[in-house]
Length: 132
Image 1 (spheres, rainbow, N blue to C red):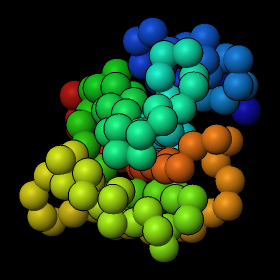
Image 2: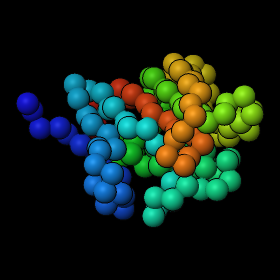
Image 3: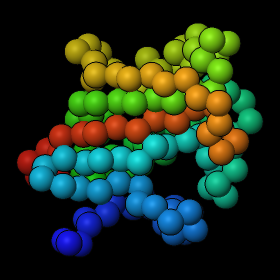
């Protein structure tokens, strides 16, 4: 098996090592990003829902930046939400702050019952720029 080309955002490597997964892996011109939650530096959840969503996007953007990419390079998005029936509208008020103009990436939204103490998670696949 080939060695994985792992991307670590600045200042968060210990968090990923503690939880035993890679934040993102480069492969064949793509970046596969693990689900990002609204965790603070110590790994604890941001308590306010909209602040948690913003922090999840900020954590995602830190990984994209470390790989030489941006949200504009994202082609596929999967989001997970605890209790989407009551939280979707509050979450979706924040998304346009990060999403950018159309055309938007593809999206799959999944309602879940548990996210390790979080309410929102986002994972993406991005096509890396040639110079990344």
